Amino acid sequence: MKTEICVIKGSTIPFDKEDTAHIVHAGEIIKNGGLVAFPTETVYGLGGDALRESSSEKIYAAKGRPSDNPLIVHIAKWEDIYKITNELPEEAKLLADQFWPGPLTMVLPKSELVPLKTTGGLNTVAVRMPSDEIARAFIEAAGGYVAAPSANLSGKPSPTKAKYVIQDMDGRIDMILDGGENEIGLESTIVDLTEETIKVLRPGFITVKDLSEALNREVEIDQAILDPHSNLIPKAPGMKYRHYAPKGELTIVEGESEMVKDYINRALEEDRRAGVMSGVITVCQHAGDYDSSIIKVAGDLEKPETIGKHLYTILREFDDENVERMYSESFSEGDFGQAIMNRLLKAAGYTVIKV
Ligand code: TXA
Ligand code: MG
Image 1 (tube, rainbow, N blue to C red):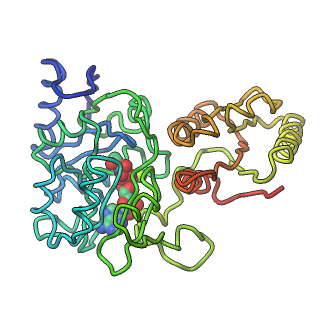
Image 2 (cartoon, rainbow, N blue to C red):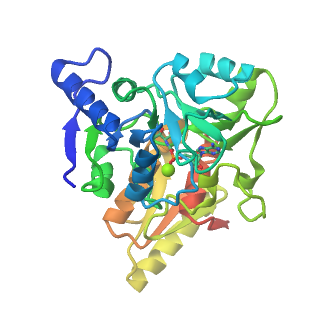
């Protein structure tokens, strides 16, 4: 299949004539049962018509993803939620008021209209309204309901730039809308509103604290994702797969920063002697601490959002540069630190050294 790649120059509505033509064309592709990758504020999505079984099947095939892992349905305006849900708890409205459009996905009871193929056989549906205006214009053009997982091949880091979508999806889908680098760089927070206790199933930019303040009640986090060695099964099926794995071996080194620095420098020296290519993930405050030619500065310790934004890009760069071993500092600071560490730990296969 030939994949059309279109750069969208603008980032806000109204789009110029050329951008509009690309977006309308992308919408037509979805309406005709095809697949289009598109930017959102979190990561790139791989979109298909959420209400059409065959489109969901195509998405699973293009990603190489197990079909028991449900897709998020993306909408562009609040009214559209009524058609795809059966029951709307008050909390959904409160959260939408505060966080939509934005990086929050809500799990709700699904209506008949949503095929089980889209929800991986579940009778709930995950819904999100992205704040990215290219995304919303595209969803509208596509008929209002776009099912989209992240636009990576299963097992690779989510793409945060169009070039990584091209790397994974060229030849597998009809079109890629290139809207530049994504703002947040980590996938949306998923909150489950179908049970008595409100739970975060995947941490993200909107934190447990944000949600609990907005609802004025306690919000928990799915214990299964905090303790991967327990026998608990995560409620979001996607969280059980080993995700975001770089090709090389990633180790997180945790502890007092002088000790971390010493440990990593020793490991780098050993790797050098053994002829193993290795690199470091750090922050601007510590960039000068390491003796390696491959140092990736994720961001600023004082601004965790900068670390979240660059994490997946760094993991992809290590792959492109064939780095065999990587050492990362731990970035658990702040509420958003939980989301960053969730992804980093998965990428490391939970290998953590405490010094
Ligand atoms: O930021 C995002 O959410 C991005 C952009 C493209 O919007 N999308 C994304 O989709 O990350 P994906 O497919 O990579 O991750 C969706 C996650 C999976 O872990 C899946 O198991 C979970 O959402 N999920 C979807 N529907 C669910 C449901 N009904 N109940 C529980 N978990 C659900
Ligand atoms: Mg994904």
